Length: 101
Length: 368
Image (cartoon, rainbow over all chains, first blue to last red; front, side, top):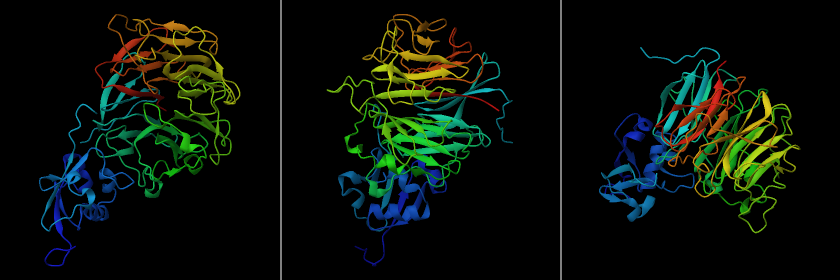
């Protein structure tokens, strides 16, 4: 799947404070991928070790990590296989886990 | 200008792992203590250890709530932290997920640079380059009984590692709720070492494995002697774990988590037994128990420890330790954030820190 120009979608990924050190102390970076999973792969290439902060070794998204495509939680879309339009914004947040931690 | 921590030789350093960060206490006389929070804040630190075999490298488990579990190390007493170049991660093919890192054990003096780590799901990891890269012990990971291992309430955790100082090929590990295991061939194979220890929560209370071992220590001069605190009893082995003898004797409960011994008087052992349901002191007196005769009898140590109807203190498996000073210091951290210290083998106690987050672990090192 590609966008109208035939290129890999480029998206903006916004990071919470706890992860910014892993991406060069930036609040947001640009990354490429047709899906959230591919974007994480792309980020891993540029920032080695980042994926393990977001996903378990098995590839699943960590329990208390939420990723929003624009305003929608990808858990309620297609998870890591959620397709991404060009120009979208992914927001990464720690989940609201109060009471269980 | 950056301020760098330095300490004179002989300083006793306590590393206190808590639900929300790693704290350090230091003292020259074990009477007056300085406390500070390290920069490893707001993380669940199950365990920390200072390795002095090659300088002073501080290792800590960063069991993050949100963004993963990591081993970290610091060469400046916790001011800054590094991640290993190749950290502890299961392979994708294994299907395993790293849940928590439970224990860090610097290797024998004869193997500087070697460090062992135990994690949940139960596996043993080793580094031979001072913590930069880590490999899993394959024999344990592929143990033929592994599919029958069941977790305790804390997970399927490998929480105790005892490398035998007298034999480079021998080591013991403790896994809840699997029990004690031993290798005699430097990790190529593992056997169970649980004979005569109970698993009262199973139909067969004396199984080959399945015991909920909580913590064990090795006698420093008689390497075949081990002391164990179990979910179901306190035990001693005089034959390297081939079998065990119940040494609960006059203790008011068989249940407890930590166990520690006096390195200068190794028949002197300390435990903190608890109400098995409430997981706190039995009765109204918070008590550390001491044996001076290898478990034949126990005496309650209470001087300076709290008493009252409100006193309900629990101590987790890594929450008690001794130092190597003579007479030995004993340190007990509670799961409600109090840290008690004795500098006279437990005869008297002082509260040296309060209002900490729940304490997971206390380790003591005399700085060289």
